[in-house]
Length: 54
Image (cartoon, rainbow, N blue to C red):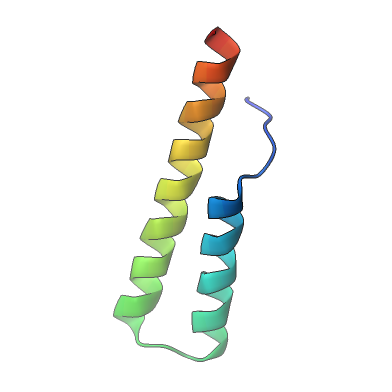
């Protein structure tokens, strides 16, 4: 398990998801937010692994 500080992009993606869920946005918008959050987390984890290996 990699422990790393939460990057701003991940925090922003989480906030956008909460905003859209609260506003009861269309399902496609929420799906898009979830995909963006997963991708931001994946990139952050990948970067953390690269930093550990370096």
